[in-house]
Image (cartoon, rainbow, N blue to C red; front, side, top):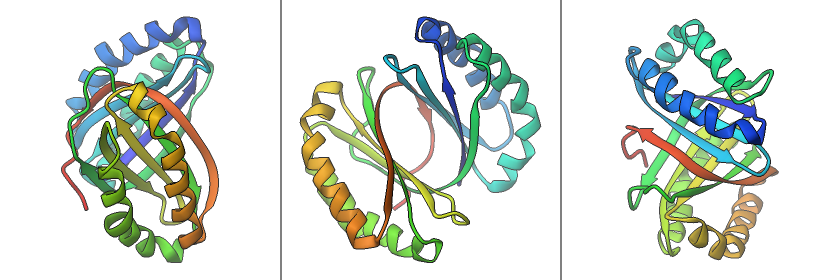
Length: 207
């Protein structure tokens, strides 16, 4: 399975307009496209950063919808009060759900880079080491890993029941994250926290 992420730096005062457009226009449109298995949206209202992720059954489905989603993306970007967006395509390498995400859910996203030759080691460590440790965290809901096998870039998203749970696990998550990176010789790129505004993904458990 594969994903397309669109990152927009919104005008914070236009955040609600953009969210409404994605919910009412983009989501129904992409859901009707062949191979689409849902959409999620992360928002940081303070910075204006928005990440919209669409999930697809195959790489072919991603490629086949590139032009069809362009107009939707351009409209949503304008609704958020932004002039452009950054688009990336990924492999959905792993998904683990312990609990469903509710309306108060938040997410911590960690971007890293690793030698592409070590991708299989990353996946094995995700399954055997990271998942059991995350399952023990209070308020933990789910974990997903997106990979770019050509560049070695990866995006790890941990979803929590609410902001209080996410904040309470921040130090412990940092310790686990740093240990994970040292073990796999991964270079840290960025860590950011968001509200999970839309969670309409139908990606099955992949571990």
